[in-house]
Length: 265
Ligand SMILES: Cc1ncc(C[n+]2csc(CCOP(=O)(O)O)c2C)c(N)n1
Ligand SMILES: [Mg+2]
Image (tube, rainbow, N blue to C red; front, side, top):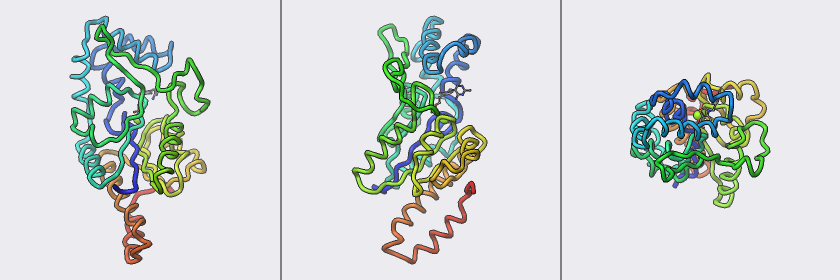
């Protein structure tokens, strides 16, 4: 086991679209989705959209088939398999839902690479309808974070993971994400952690505008080629820097690799 935990956002990070929009659009429910969007929070809207699809005769198998052909860059699965093979602890933190994520990861043959999936719970009810629930029950209590949507504060999830890691000795985090919801967790990372925001996506813009709020090293990525290249380079570099104390000859190699990485100043 390496001392590295890699935390992945899901939509527009592991897969190349928003899974919610993908299912709605592919099953022909875009118009009703657009009508309902201004009237309720996203997470409640997804539960409602699953009801609409059920009423239109769409089955759970139809949803599975659509999820199984979701766009993903060909380098992403090899990157995840390689990070797992190198002994990293891989986790998902996503505002999609458990049914979508597990269906896609199983189809890609990488479900077992992940030790944990933190997302909105979902289940198939007795009528065969997919139900989507909030990660935090915002009807019961407010998570109190002003940056995040009411159903999920990814920063709270990172703090829980950090507390767990603190009990297991020193572990370093690499976080990959794209969305506005990935900014709060990124502000919780330490100097020795690495943040990989997707270039020109909301979290990248928020980091550029609030550079002082982010202590972690920042490495932007554009596509699956970067996802693969930068992630594996960072894992190697972080492992090297752990070995530096026992083998100082690694130091030059380590510095050289650091220069080779693309960073946001
Ligand atoms: C303008 C606008 N309205 C609503 C949303 C909400 N939203 C869209 S896809 C998604 C799932 C993200 O999953 P993951 O955390 O895996 O990326 C969420 C919560 C948004 N992003 N932008
Ligand atoms: Mg995302």
